Image (tube, rainbow, N blue to C red; front, side, top):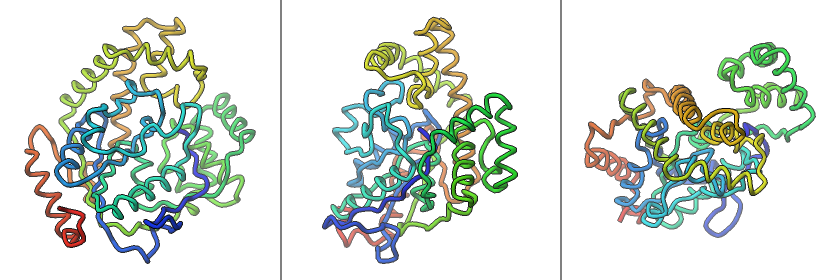
Length: 342
């Protein structure tokens, strides 16, 4: 996913009129958010909860948006989708960059539509930017991509190093630099692009307007050794289920290795194997290692000490306890009277 922040979008009201879902005219309605690191068990918990509570799931996963990228993205199964409707899966081809603004607008539109139909929306995923953009109502700088400037900045990072590029951002926008890891070159480039084109720091343009939702955030976590074991087991299943063949199909369909979608976890390492750069065992080991690093990044987005997130360990807390907590939350919204909880 390219960290582009372009044109903001509005949601759609039940009658099809374009209305900003963050407008004060909207009644505060419930939104259940389930977050946490890869392989912690978000999907299983969310499907159980949604099935029990007349809910539908909105994916907040920056890889599951791509068509044809199923195994490597750990996309929910057809059976899970049949039992509980899922949204914002398979919405673009791998060569199409979905901007954060587009995702935010789509998510607000789905949430609005679900409320209009008397359904409980569950926003579920581990993509920090996606979740925070929706939950916090991020402002999206209206600066379109400038390919030449991006290429120039990427070349600068290549020749002078990612830390040097990050230092340049720190001089122009200290607030943005403080929250962007220097290793995330794409985000550094985007922040510089917005600043250089608009003349304003991206941190100032990203003003937040909280959406009109009563939000319950549930974090799914496990002890680190257990989580790492689950990651290893998941990756082994991906290989057994045909991840190599999936990547071969994508390449045969003409998708370039340099596409952001093709450089994601799993796809990048299998690509190295298919190009003869490393063996399959080494590719699998790299996927496991780099997924653990990714988990560490996810915990910076979703902090265990964040008072806004109620953390649960599915291996310790019974499902019935979590279900009761969500029922209590939905009851507090008085949505039983409006038909959202039947």
